Image (cartoon, rainbow, N blue to C red; front, side, top):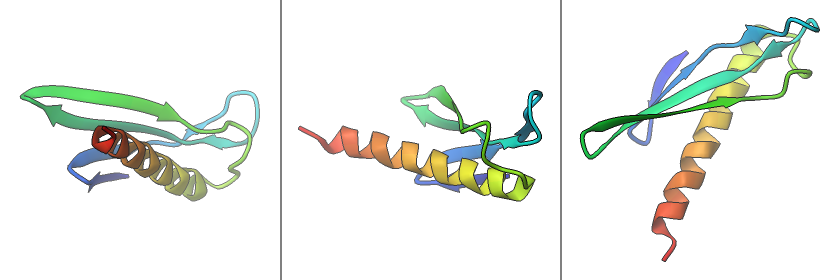
Length: 77
């Protein structure tokens, strides 16, 4: 899945856990900061999602929460 949230690009890809039959949510968040491309990779739990769609949705929600936390820190004096 690929989408933009608060000027950040979110790309997700669930991966199948090699040890179990669960999907692991992954996301990369990328943005431009003063002309320099930045990115951050996050990974979710490896023992929760039996369906790939659920892992993908979780990855998006996880990325949005990370973005929101970072934007709130920027506003803290």
